[in-house]
Amino acid sequence: MTIAARPAFACLLATALLPVAGCASRDGFPSLAPRPIERMARADAPAEAETPSTADPALVQRIAAVERSAGAAAAAFADVADQAQTALARPGATVSGSDAWAAAQTRYSAAVAARGALQDAVDELDALRRERENGAAADIAAIEAAGKRIAPLDRAADARLSALAGRLAP
Image (cartoon, rainbow, N blue to C red):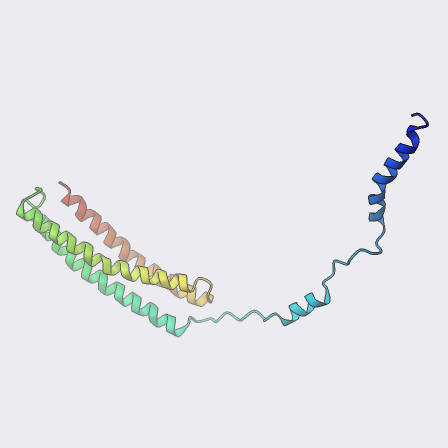
Protein backbone atom coordinates (compact mmCIF):
# COMPACT_ATOMS: atom_id res chain seq x y z
CA MET A 1 0.00 0.00 0.00
CA THR A 2 1.07 3.50 -0.63
CA ILE A 3 1.45 6.00 2.14
CA ALA A 4 -1.52 8.03 0.86
CA ALA A 5 -3.82 4.97 0.96
CA ARG A 6 -2.98 4.07 4.57
CA PRO A 7 -4.97 6.86 6.27
CA ALA A 8 -8.02 6.07 4.09
CA PHE A 9 -7.68 2.37 4.89
CA ALA A 10 -7.29 3.10 8.61
CA CYS A 11 -10.38 5.30 8.54
CA LEU A 12 -12.38 2.61 6.69
CA LEU A 13 -11.22 -0.06 9.12
CA ALA A 14 -12.12 2.06 12.13
CA THR A 15 -15.58 2.76 10.69
CA ALA A 16 -16.20 -0.95 10.05
CA LEU A 17 -15.03 -2.03 13.52
CA LEU A 18 -16.82 0.69 15.47
CA PRO A 19 -20.25 -1.07 15.53
CA VAL A 20 -18.61 -4.36 16.53
CA ALA A 21 -16.78 -2.68 19.38
CA GLY A 22 -20.10 -1.41 20.72
CA CYS A 23 -21.37 -4.95 21.08
CA ALA A 24 -18.65 -5.85 23.51
CA SER A 25 -19.88 -3.39 26.13
CA ARG A 26 -22.92 -4.35 28.24
CA ASP A 27 -23.50 -0.93 29.75
CA GLY A 28 -26.28 1.19 28.30
CA PHE A 29 -28.27 -1.61 26.64
CA PRO A 30 -31.83 -2.29 27.79
CA SER A 31 -32.53 -5.39 29.78
CA LEU A 32 -34.59 -8.18 28.26
CA ALA A 33 -36.23 -8.86 31.62
CA PRO A 34 -39.97 -8.05 31.93
CA ARG A 35 -40.68 -4.40 32.71
CA PRO A 36 -42.73 -3.54 35.81
CA ILE A 37 -45.84 -2.86 33.72
CA GLU A 38 -45.51 -6.30 32.11
CA ARG A 39 -45.24 -7.95 35.51
CA MET A 40 -48.42 -6.15 36.63
CA ALA A 41 -50.30 -7.30 33.54
CA ARG A 42 -49.40 -10.90 34.28
CA ALA A 43 -50.49 -10.58 37.90
CA ASP A 44 -53.86 -9.09 36.87
CA ALA A 45 -54.59 -11.78 34.27
CA PRO A 46 -57.51 -14.00 35.27
CA ALA A 47 -56.64 -17.50 36.28
CA GLU A 48 -57.58 -20.28 33.90
CA ALA A 49 -61.12 -21.40 34.63
CA GLU A 50 -61.44 -24.99 35.68
CA THR A 51 -62.97 -27.23 33.07
CA PRO A 52 -66.27 -28.58 34.34
CA SER A 53 -66.49 -32.35 34.28
CA THR A 54 -70.14 -32.37 33.20
CA ALA A 55 -71.82 -30.69 30.27
CA ASP A 56 -74.09 -27.69 30.68
CA PRO A 57 -77.55 -29.01 31.67
CA ALA A 58 -79.31 -26.70 29.20
CA LEU A 59 -77.07 -28.01 26.42
CA VAL A 60 -77.75 -31.60 27.46
CA GLN A 61 -81.49 -30.92 27.16
CA ARG A 62 -81.04 -29.37 23.69
CA ILE A 63 -78.97 -32.35 22.57
CA ALA A 64 -81.59 -34.78 23.88
CA ALA A 65 -84.28 -32.90 21.94
CA VAL A 66 -82.20 -33.08 18.77
CA GLU A 67 -81.66 -36.81 19.25
CA ARG A 68 -85.38 -37.40 19.82
CA SER A 69 -86.13 -35.40 16.69
CA ALA A 70 -83.57 -37.41 14.70
CA GLY A 71 -85.01 -40.70 15.93
CA ALA A 72 -88.56 -39.70 15.05
CA ALA A 73 -87.43 -38.41 11.64
CA ALA A 74 -85.52 -41.64 10.94
CA ALA A 75 -88.60 -43.72 11.81
CA ALA A 76 -90.85 -41.56 9.63
CA PHE A 77 -88.35 -41.76 6.80
CA ALA A 78 -88.20 -45.56 7.07
CA ASP A 79 -91.99 -45.78 6.74
CA VAL A 80 -92.08 -43.53 3.69
CA ALA A 81 -89.06 -45.29 2.14
CA ASP A 82 -90.84 -48.64 2.64
CA GLN A 83 -93.83 -47.24 0.73
CA ALA A 84 -91.53 -46.08 -2.07
CA GLN A 85 -89.91 -49.50 -2.20
CA THR A 86 -93.31 -51.17 -2.40
CA ALA A 87 -94.32 -48.81 -5.22
CA LEU A 88 -91.10 -49.65 -7.07
CA ALA A 89 -91.83 -53.38 -6.76
CA ARG A 90 -95.06 -53.05 -8.73
CA PRO A 91 -95.05 -54.19 -12.36
CA GLY A 92 -94.15 -51.38 -14.74
CA ALA A 93 -92.71 -49.14 -11.98
CA THR A 94 -89.38 -48.93 -13.78
CA VAL A 95 -90.89 -48.10 -17.17
CA SER A 96 -90.53 -44.37 -17.62
CA GLY A 97 -93.87 -42.63 -18.17
CA SER A 98 -96.11 -45.44 -16.91
CA ASP A 99 -98.68 -44.90 -14.17
CA ALA A 100 -96.76 -47.22 -11.85
CA TRP A 101 -93.55 -45.29 -12.54
CA ALA A 102 -95.33 -41.99 -11.75
CA ALA A 103 -96.63 -43.46 -8.48
CA ALA A 104 -93.12 -44.68 -7.59
CA GLN A 105 -91.72 -41.21 -8.39
CA THR A 106 -94.30 -39.66 -6.07
CA ARG A 107 -93.40 -42.07 -3.26
CA TYR A 108 -89.70 -41.45 -3.84
CA SER A 109 -90.28 -37.69 -3.63
CA ALA A 110 -92.10 -38.22 -0.34
CA ALA A 111 -89.08 -40.18 0.95
CA VAL A 112 -86.75 -37.35 -0.06
CA ALA A 113 -88.97 -34.90 1.82
CA ALA A 114 -89.08 -37.18 4.88
CA ARG A 115 -85.32 -37.40 4.84
CA GLY A 116 -85.21 -33.62 5.11
CA ALA A 117 -86.47 -33.80 8.71
CA LEU A 118 -83.54 -36.05 9.59
CA GLN A 119 -81.16 -33.66 7.86
CA ASP A 120 -82.66 -30.80 9.91
CA ALA A 121 -81.71 -32.64 13.11
CA VAL A 122 -78.16 -33.17 11.82
CA ASP A 123 -77.94 -29.49 10.89
CA GLU A 124 -79.17 -28.45 14.33
CA LEU A 125 -76.48 -30.56 15.97
CA ASP A 126 -73.89 -28.95 13.70
CA ALA A 127 -75.16 -25.52 14.78
CA LEU A 128 -74.70 -26.54 18.43
CA ARG A 129 -71.19 -27.69 17.60
CA ARG A 130 -70.35 -24.32 16.04
CA GLU A 131 -71.86 -22.44 19.00
CA ARG A 132 -69.73 -24.35 21.48
CA GLU A 133 -66.54 -24.90 19.47
CA ASN A 134 -64.53 -22.90 22.00
CA GLY A 135 -66.60 -24.01 24.98
CA ALA A 136 -66.00 -26.42 27.79
CA ALA A 137 -64.55 -29.81 26.92
CA ALA A 138 -67.52 -31.59 28.51
CA ASP A 139 -69.95 -29.64 26.27
CA ILE A 140 -67.99 -30.49 23.15
CA ALA A 141 -67.77 -34.15 24.19
CA ALA A 142 -71.55 -34.32 24.68
CA ILE A 143 -72.16 -32.85 21.23
CA GLU A 144 -69.65 -35.21 19.61
CA ALA A 145 -71.23 -38.22 21.33
CA ALA A 146 -74.66 -37.22 20.02
CA GLY A 147 -73.17 -36.80 16.55
CA LYS A 148 -71.85 -40.36 16.70
CA ARG A 149 -75.32 -41.62 17.58
CA ILE A 150 -77.11 -39.62 14.86
CA ALA A 151 -74.58 -40.14 12.03
CA PRO A 152 -75.53 -43.81 11.39
CA LEU A 153 -79.19 -42.80 10.97
CA ASP A 154 -78.17 -40.18 8.45
CA ARG A 155 -75.87 -42.54 6.53
CA ALA A 156 -78.55 -45.24 6.42
CA ALA A 157 -81.11 -42.78 5.05
CA ASP A 158 -78.63 -41.64 2.37
CA ALA A 159 -77.91 -45.23 1.36
CA ARG A 160 -81.61 -46.08 1.21
CA LEU A 161 -82.40 -43.04 -0.96
CA SER A 162 -79.51 -43.89 -3.29
CA ALA A 163 -80.79 -47.44 -3.68
CA LEU A 164 -84.31 -46.19 -4.43
CA ALA A 165 -83.03 -43.63 -6.92
CA GLY A 166 -81.00 -46.31 -8.68
CA ARG A 167 -84.13 -48.35 -9.24
CA LEU A 168 -86.04 -45.34 -10.57
CA ALA A 169 -83.54 -44.45 -13.26
CA PRO A 170 -85.01 -44.97 -16.74
